Structures are given as structure tokens and as C-alpha cells.
Length: 468
Ligand code: NDP
Image 1: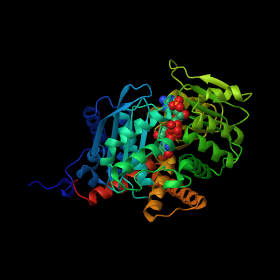
Image 2: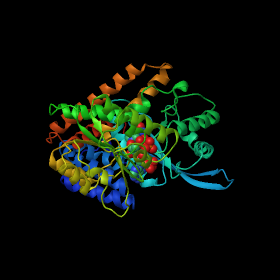
Image 3: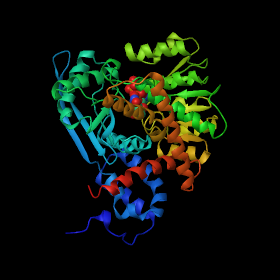
Image 4: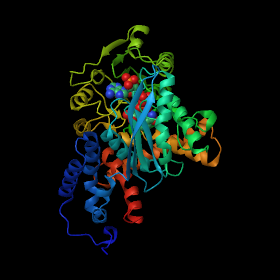
């Protein structure tokens, strides 16, 4: 019998840089066409080259080769009937990426653009993000190419029920605990949970983001946006600055964007933009509490488009998205700070250069991987404060972890208690990233800090658990 690689002495090895490029070639060959997955892996392994020089044991145990391979990928048919009685067929997915430090945990995304590569990038990022939260959660992600936009509540319910009819057998409070993401908010979680409960015949904390009356946690809806702003506060502190009086760009207009704006207002900053996939609104007077309440009603209740903002509020202008343009007009608005909170790759190198040129000195990522690799390089080269997604937006999943704890204990913490825990977790994540960046010789580079700090805990758990 051959000796497991986890206990074999390290073979003679070439440079970490060569090893990492070989690994990337393998990832691209084994996962053709999954460009977002290649991008996410590429960013992480580039940082990890710094670790491998000091820790050859990770190479000999093939930790990286294992960490880029999902433990399990589920792909399934989701048939449902629309309001006209016509049969629709979507594709459902769940990527169970890594369970070294806890049950798989990560959101479900319902959006027309969803495919295997996008969910694998999200699941991969989730592994490191969840590790950073200090809570015992592995990484996963799932979703469907179903687009809830323009669908009736009945249609959304029929879809969610069909989706859960397959998913329920693969998840559980100690196995895999999904949550929301793009297109999956309180309404969808409710329908999904109802069907799970019916099929499994149990009331358990199998999903997070639940309604407050049936196991949800206070502050969960706010958590990603609030957490991202707390992270930004910590970054600014390192330069003895605060958010007070700072003009801020926020993209998107969904869950993360709304609560980013709310926390910015709490801290006397001035948010001036929002967007959706059709266009951008710029309100130089600032999006105040009254306007934010109107946006929340527009997006969460009426399910309307952000364009209506410019018709409603004088002085605001609407800029429709031009798919032919190689830039996003939101990032050319002059400001001090930017909070990308819509979707992946919404900032390219050109957008990043505009941001830096126009005086932005802080970027905190609410969305997952909103900056391309080239854009990230622009921020790092310019030495602005740059908070990468897996650290800056970890407040959402951290509070999901707190929801799991409350469910297990069968009690609910107050709003203040959850918010304090969230705040402390964001502080701890910032400290871990900041100190790790310094320890590995790249002070201030929170990309390296987040990737390395997130990796070490998972890698060590994988070493402890043998070749599985
Ligand atoms: P929502 O569905 O609530 O909102 C998404 C927003 O982004 C909408 O305004 C949507 O506009 C816009 N958007 C989506 N796709 C595109 C696109 N291709 N181009 C331009 N705009 C787009 O989702 P969330 O707010 O929950 O998620 C936003 C981001 O934050 C995602 O990257 C998600 O992965 C990330 N995130 C979310 C967490 C959470 O707790 N919810 C946790 C951590 C990260 P439209 O209505 O036109 O689609």
C-alpha cells in the first residue's frame, strides 16, 4: 500500500512561483471555460506562494491540489410551472467545496447568469472567507439560472419548492447550511425553508436568513453591508481617518447596498450613487434616510428599477448601462471611498484607474470579487486602502454563523448583542489580515493578508484530518 502524501517527506521541490504556475495550468485544463473560477483561484494561489516558501509541508500533502477540487458538486433539473400553465426548466447547483473546519456554508444565487464556473468561484472564495470569521464553517455555494426578476410571488414559490425538492436530501444543520445571495432574499428563503420542513419533517436551522418569527437572527439582513462599513472604518483607522464627511460611491441597490448606505449614514458619510443591471443613479445632494427608505420600498416591495429614483428626486441623474462600453460610469464619479456591492468583475482596470485618478483612497468590497485581477493590481500599486471581498464582506456569513448558534441554543440574542458580535468579528478579521500581511512581508496588502490567514486554518485542519 502506498503511504498517504500527508505523511510523506517533502519531495525535492522547485520554486513556489513555478509550482503555483503549474497548479494554475492544471486548474485551467481541468476546468475549461470556468473563467471566474480561474480568476478566484489565481488570486489566492499567487498570495500563497509566500506561504509555500516557509511551509513545504503544504506542498507535499498536496493541500492546494485538494483545496481547488470541490468535495462534491451537485447539478440537477428544476422543473416548475409558470402562471400561464407552461412548464419551465431551470438548472440547480450546490457546490460543497470544503468541510475541513465545519459544515458547508454559503449562499444560494438565483440569477440568469448563474453557471458552474461562477458558483465554483463563489464556493472557493467562501472557504477562505468563512475561515476568517473565526467561526466553525466550511465553504459551499449554490443556486440556479432562474431569474426572479419579473416573476410573480406564485412563480417564485413554485420554483423554490421544486429546487428544494432535490436539494433537501443533500443539506442539513450539521451537513450544509445554505443562505441567500443575489436574487435570494427573505421571500425566497421562506419558500425554500417551508418546503425543506415539509420534506424532512423537522424544524431545524438548515437555512440562514430566516424570518425573525421562525428562527432568524436580528441584524442578519443588515450584516453584510454593516460589516463592510465596519471593515472600512478599521482600514481608515490605520491612517488616522474616519468616514465622517466622506463622499461614497455604492453600486447595486439590493441587500448589501441598502445596508451599506444605512451604516454610512449612521457614521455621517455621504453616499451618492446606486445602480442595478440597467443603469446608475448619481445624486450629488446625497442619499439621505428618507431617500433610502424609498429605495428599500422600491427594491424590496415594489421590485422596481433604480431608474425611478431619478424621476422621483430632483437633482439626481440616471445613466443607463451601455453594454458596448468597456467601463462602468459609476466609477468615474468623484468621491473619497467606493463600496462595490453589486456583482463580480464590476470594476475593470480602466474603472480602477478612474477611481484612483478621481481621488478615491478606500475601496471596500461588499460584492464578491467585484474587481478584476488587473483592477486589484491598480489599487495595490496605488497603495490606497483596499479591502478585498473575502474579508470586507464576511459579516454576512459571520452573522449567519451567529444565527446557527442561536438556533442550536434555541434562543435569540438582542439586536445590540448581535451587532456587537458582528462588529467584533469585523475588527478581528481586519486585525488578522493586517498582521498576516505584515508577517509575510507585504505590509498593508490585505489581499495577501486575507488569502493567507484564511488559508492557514483550513490547510492545517486538512493536514490533521489526513487524505480525505
Ligand atoms: P441582491 O439580489 O439583493 O442585489 C444585487 C444587486 O446587484 C441588484 O441591485 C442587482 O441589480 C445588481 N446586479 C446583479 N447583477 C448585476 C450585474 N450583472 N450588473 C449590474 N448589477 C447587477 O444581492 P445582494 O445584495 O445580496 O448581493 C450583492 C453582492 O454581494 C453579490 O456579489 C453577493 O455575492 C455579495 N454578497 C452578499 C451577501 C449577502 O449577505 N447577501 C454576503 C456576501 C456577499 P438587478 O436588480 O438589476 O439584478
